[in-house]
Image (cartoon, rainbow, N blue to C red; front, side, top):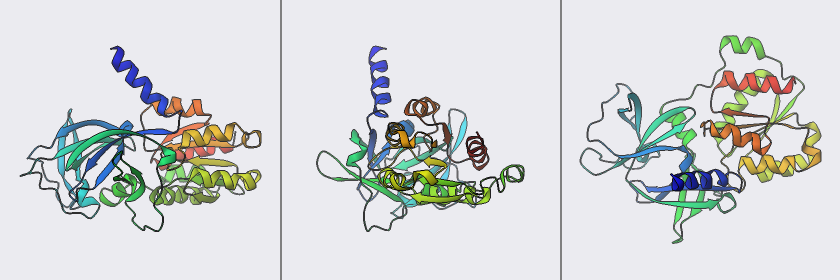
Length: 299
């Protein structure tokens, strides 16, 4: 019990020190990839039988019964354009993850190891136009670890609800007129989804892909910004550290801050509050997001 508690506390403290623990794994190209441990529910050996779903994306291999729930099973290799994993004949593994308040099962070639890295040591690749790649870190051996943009992959493979409901649209349309929102996210897909909601609400907005750039922008333009919506997982500086950094400076204290993340575990609500955020909103629910935005700018 003590060791489990110590481990939980250690992982919780990572959010206060700009660090991330990742599980590394390999796909069919034998390259090393990484995923945030906080998003992993379980790792299991891939069953040889997975029931197909008609008319689904080629990377969706079917559904898997997990604790009484049917989960979509995505071959992560095929989803990023690599050779498919022959899980019916070769040993493979399934990483069950929570993204956007839903569980998804990803087939991988093989898990590798656990590593802790500072977000300052995780870099966005320059000059690389790969929608599925969001950042690069390095293993102790010096081998590159590719961090994938799972949000973009899920949007392409299974789709993401990006539209406000008619009721929500009637409630918030035009309510952002004359107000300016700063969006901070390293995922192009997430930025696009956020901007779609903000446009419908009538906000003007500026989007930046790192906390460092956002702080530079706020240094000059903070008086014109009414609300900041930031991701949590970002190369260089995570959203918790970004929020704490803003709150340490008196000129930014008036800013309303929403932390908006696919890490939808309820514990992130508390971490967001401890960092100084006004709200934590799990990705991606357009109606819920618009409601929280409206409540903050009207307060």
